[in-house]
Image (cartoon, rainbow, N blue to C red; front, side, top):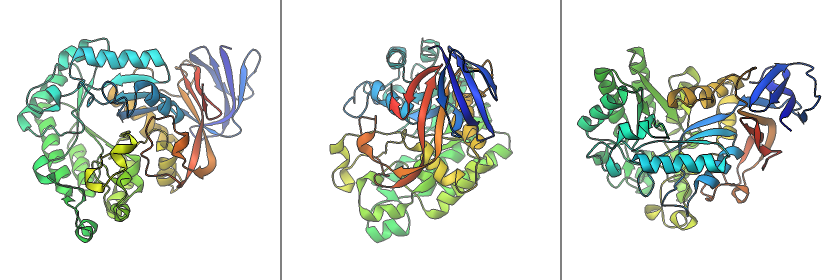
Length: 428
């Protein structure tokens, strides 16, 4: 059927309403809408949000299909309520040319579980020495607007300045992985009391904060846009807050795991907690939550980083960094932000749909749930609580830090331009 009636949904957490989808578009929003000729989905008070948008996803294809593929990654995204994801450039080969970004873009179109917008590399091969084909990637079929060497920092100030100047010409943005490499040589976890007690190499907060400080000043100097990936420290929050007070065009993201987990988890020596940037202190976690609530941090981004079993099931020092996150992100945000009273569901829609779509220029996404808008939607059972079981993940990888942990909320339905990609918790 081309018509779907979502009956009795709390749109953005408000009063229950009916939402009628006709083809790819929301036709009507109101109460007591006619179900004639429509397939009916009984929402029963579940929360209806615009489809989520992730500005920071690793899909691994091409080159690391043992970790994830565009198909498995977008299926994971649909399971988590996402209708669009931005795919990072650290693939093999690196997405530093028009040809590679077009390949990723077309794979996303082919599979159809969510829209895939490739992120182009800032430098050739992520080596930080020479600018990649930024203009060609922007002008390609993929229409790249976000560029990042994520996984590595653009640590050369001259290269970073040139990148900011270049993307300014077409309204693009450079997304920086803020990590001063000399300050993190041999680092294994957050530098602090826990690292000292465990004897693991410390990753100081200043390694992140110094790069953010430099880059917001560069963005101000050339009047360009910079986005800070996976901000993780209280000090970073203060720098971004200061930059915004000066009118600098900076945006920032926080991951779900940095909103919930602390470096105390590393005492288990379980490599599932090894991530870049590392888990920080309780003080940092609380500062990140407050900054997301007050808008200093603009968005939640998953940094979904899948790894095969053998890359994580080993000793801590040898383990790969990263966690999967697409299928648990909304639950963690409910736990840390909604259930604590820091955000309402309209705020979640803002931080996980409206703003990331705006930053990344994701056309048709992050739109209001109102008549005439594209039917990119997700329905959430906010009353649900259950243990995380990675065996049921759609992702090819299982490296979640939440295995066996009880989390609230469950995405039951996802629609991409009116087509159901998830129904009653099952992929279509």
